[in-house]
Length: 144
Picture 1: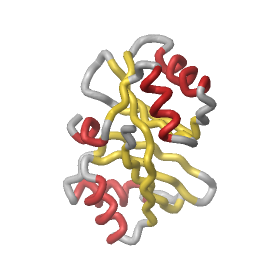
Picture 2: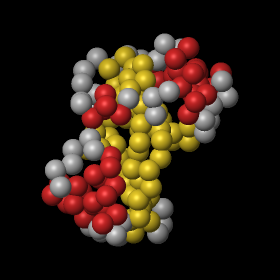
Picture 3: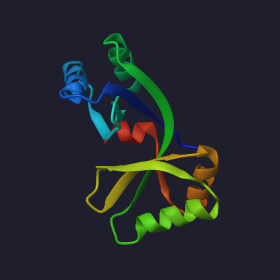
Picture 4: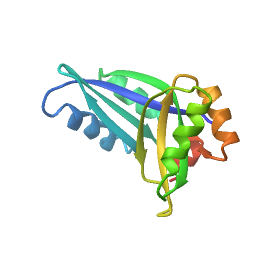
């Protein structure tokens, strides 16, 4: 199984909160590989994949941010119509529930990469393997 560690940073839903997180990451030389920002009425969740997970978590916690690390899956699929549908069909056939997903840039203009949060990483990984879907490791992403 190729789990990837995703960092979730919880911030108030107010101006400059995401900017503050990004400023700290920039100042410490962290390179982001994937990012998603979601909000509710009161708070936001910045989900990110960084080139150095431990360092990123340490600096954000030192700056008093609430940080959580979650294991997710990352995949790379051809950048052609219907590929994401195929991935979701493969997962659905194994009754894997997709909780959320977001795309990020890869190293090829012929492929697209996705972070996927599912209810069962092991089951999803097996299904993706059987479906011939390329799973990315944390090292793969860090080297992009």
